[in-house]
Image (tube, rainbow, N blue to C red):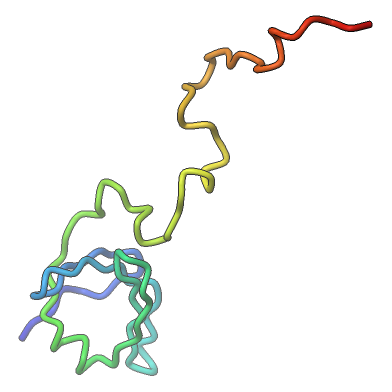
Length: 97
């Protein structure tokens, strides 16, 4: 079987429908390290890589799934677009000085 060219950062789909990204490739050792979309990391020798029968795909639109990121990981408030003023919840309290 002819597998697509192995390249770091390349996205592939297995015959089982799993999406994965190549995160490391060592031609001298004959190993391919991949991270599945769910975050699982696996290492394959070239024979096992061939057995996966992968096909090249475009990166998923939401590639963050493979990195197990949550909304808090982005460092921004995704509920309020940039430039929108966020009201202070204490503004309704009267000044007691």
